[in-house]
Image 1 (cartoon, rainbow, N blue to C red):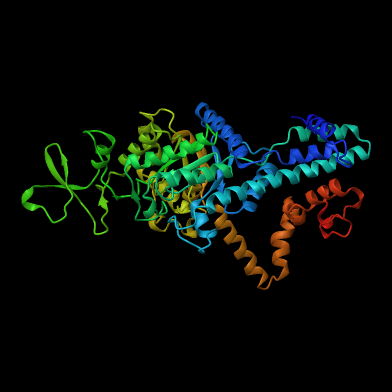
Image 2 (cartoon, one colour):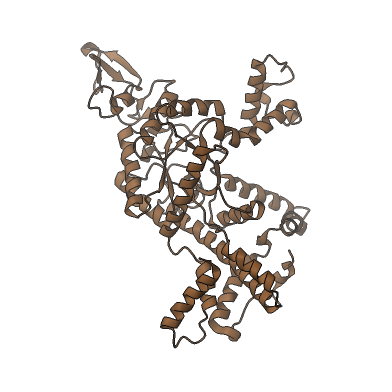
Length: 532
């Protein structure tokens, strides 16, 4: 709906009901409507699900159309990310938000910092989804408010051409609200608990929910040891629970990301139930590390499996967990992914121990033999040592080519001593191209970094603290922060405006007219940045 159509619609409402509504203006009401186009989280989920589905179809047609996101642990961080994207690229197309369960545990739990083991309050995750979208909607209101003020100035100066240009810009305004990929960990309990929590996610605005195949009460970060997976039927029950939550709430095109941790998980808590040879439970059990036994060498409390006329004893640890055969991780990943896609999942997440395109592509190609359009969400994880990994990959590739590598120590390639070498330059080139290469060669539709803003917050705070409390004093803030904000065009330099002061002034004027006591007067120090 255009700006003028919105004004006309508001005017109709006022004419119908507002004979005694003194001081209520249609254009002011229209502006408020445009500044708050999403009234509920479900509005957002339905809107963003369509965006994500369109992006998935575009990627299927052209792998250069991959999507990206950064993990954000606070609404303000997500807001500033989207404002920056619009400033630098002119559009938010293909850029999403990622909500990391790791960062919720580490930064948002009432218990204080926690490891990524699903010990944080599960309601803190939908609360963060709602917070992120609250800040993105506020970014819409703030930017549109500035456009409305510019429109008023153009009208007051009699510049009809400029007024028309601004009105067209308002009609073409692109919202900061984008899809969010939200981490529900292993579901925080049984399938019913997963369903109930998924509804909270969706009601808060999530169009895409990521769920993993670990045991909920044994949950570990995908980059740590001790991970325990569940049989496929258990995981499928949770995928179905999420799908039913989407359907119940009318987000029929909601997206489910099925994450498998099987590549690094060598343990299971359960032996899968099997009805007949070759079914999914039997395939899961076939990966168990077993030894053949007979009645003469049975131990007290042994658990046995019958297969092909033989009795097998799965290896059970003192923790009461069962062990998979070493070297079966990739095969288990492929089976997990195929089974998930055939039973309701839309996208895959394979948690790997290193960012190696060849390794990822090998698994994806095997999956695509059964499910041709299989595609991944991939964690460009800060848990990887990207510099060392890629320098070692280049080292190994050059060694296979027979190149002289006597100047390099493979174990020390992280060293600054190698930074200017051809090997380091080639490694950085491969890192720079990792996303487009992996999208093309390894089926990665969505690239994300799970916890980048955790690290950027730590680094920027360290730099400011070092300077401000040291010899630089106030210059550390002025030169390192404020001067850069001004010169690099960060809207946040006017922090009162960013926090909604001007939007509030507009509302005061709508409500009280000339009697409004506005904050943005001549004595507001933010006017020092008016030209910034």
